[in-house]
Amino acid sequence: MSELRASVGAALPELSVVLPTRNEADNIEPLLAGLRDALNAVDFELVFVDDSDDQTAQILAREAILDPRVRVVHRAPELREGGLSTAVVLGLHEARGRLVGVMDADLQHPPETILAMLAAEREGADLVVASRYLPGGSRAGLAGGFRQFVSRAASLLVRAVFIEARASSDPLAGFFLCRSSLLRGVEFRPVGFKILLELLVCSPHLKVADVPLQFQSRTAGESKASTTQGLLFLRHIWSLIYDVPGSARIWKFSAVGISGLALLLAILELGGTVLGWPALAAWAVAFVLSVLWNFSWNLRLTFADLRRERYPLMRRYVSSTLTAGGAQLIVFLGLVGTPLPLVLDGLLAAVLGMGVNGALNWQLARRHRRPSQLAIGIDHFLAHLGKVSGAQLTALLDQNGREVAFWGRPSAEATELLRSLAERASYGGLPVLWTEPPSRRPQARTNVELASIMVLPLELPGFERFTVALQRRTRSAFSSDDLEATMRQLERLRPRLGLGSDGAAADQPAAPGRPAQPAAELSGNRGQRGPGTTSRLG
Ligand code: GDD
Ligand code: MN
Image (cartoon, rainbow, N blue to C red; front, side, top):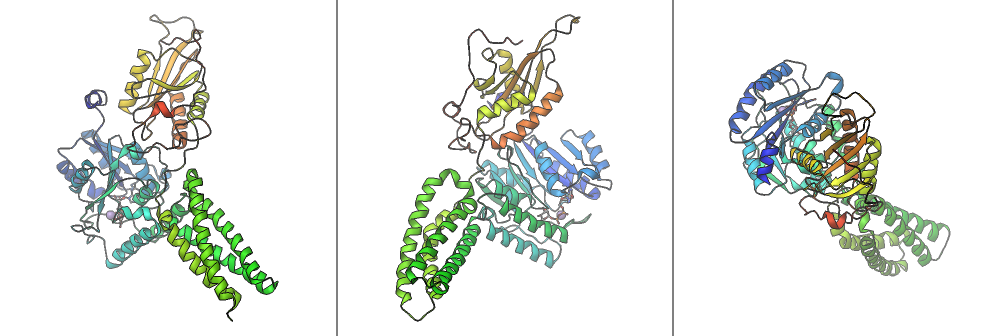
């Protein structure tokens, strides 16, 4: 396997380092010297994503000519929206290495630290963070006591809000490294400077390790951190709470609980005091309504990512609610005879009930999030790609180039040609476009049909090296425009792809590290394969 990779994908580096730059002209040369020195035993590439208005772009362009390991994407001013965060996401997309790292280009992140990070990855970490808050690390380089205070406070805040952020001692670091396959297919929408936080919250199942970072002080250029960045940070936190189902679960659970309590007391007061119902009746109505209220909000908000586990969840929820409700009722009955106002009886009882309920559900509320629900089946996926690209046949191929699901007009068994194209696409990680030449001689007629094939790497965790092949035999072969459009569609759909049958997503979404079981899971194939109707390719 590794030999094959070495021969087919010889151009692919082991490590890509993404370096966002904005006006770092005086830092580039010393940075490159430091990186070449530190990484002399590593097969690496550097991906600069540059938004500079000074000489940085020219310096980088010159370096890229001299050293093919240096790649530069320079963004024109109108393409810089989002600043640092979009620059890093772009760099992650551009990176071709098996591993991808992100670091600052202002020498505040020492290049040697990468070696320690690589070692931590070899020991089994999915994501390695260079942390300022680990023994042996330091943040002395962070300019000024105020900046240090803000940084520490922000770090504590996100660790309080997101259980996922507790995986690292420095969730706001700008220096980290991970296996690139773990990032593919996840949509990142960071705002501002905190890209690592986005990764931690959106990919909560990664195994995270920290290595100590000695954060250096800046010697040239200036920091782009500002009050605006601070506000963007708060917006980012809000988006991670609001737009990521099941994140910050404890807080969502608590918020729902408090709103339910308010509802309970309001109904108790209205029924028992204003309308004069018997105390027990008012309590019962208030209790049932608030339970329903809590339940529906918890399903929609707190456990939005656990919808697949609805039934076990519901059983557990109902049983703990009934236990807590029983305790609540006993306390309420004990208090009703006392001179305390009815609402206070209800409140005391409910506080006790919430305590019991909270204790029973605490573990559940602390549960890490599931990866986002996979919403479309393989049939739908293949059909959609086929239709948008004008293919006659779309097939999903496994690591060995074997067809495991298909859509459209049945084809010949996977041909040698298809297999070798698939091999290129899967080991090279890049799409392949092949078209049949019209003839060995210059062709006079234009109404001949040409076979053409596109093979795109699928890059879905758990289904490494799977590809999607699209074929047709028409007067006009696939063009590079077709290829690009199809790739875009694939990128768009892939995050939602569940490798089960249409409608229902696979029970166990393919997770990193879990061995793929394609044969068992790829069941929803509705194409028909009839002998004699196969189209011949090539
Ligand atoms: N492409 C691009 N576009 N790069 C940018 C931009 C931008 O708009 N803004 C900043 N950068 C680059 C800088 O050139 C530098 O290489 C890196 O991003 C970090 O920017 P600094 O301005 O030096 O940030 P900092 O030192 O204040 O903040 C660092 O520490 C924080 C933790 O306190 C960064 O590592 C942050 O990511 C980190 O959160
Ligand atoms: Mn900096």
